[in-house]
Length: 47
Image 1 (spheres, one colour):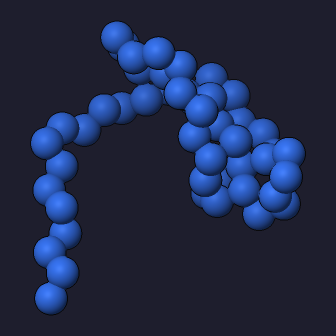
Image 2: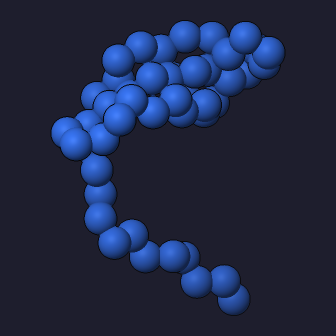
């Protein structure tokens, strides 16, 4: 049985932009930020 890893913290992030992934129709490209965190590029199949 595989145990789920526990999260040591949760960070609420703000979406700066969201758009289509340039190479995959099913994916979206998000630019996100949070206090004291540089902008991050997140690729996901969520809307």
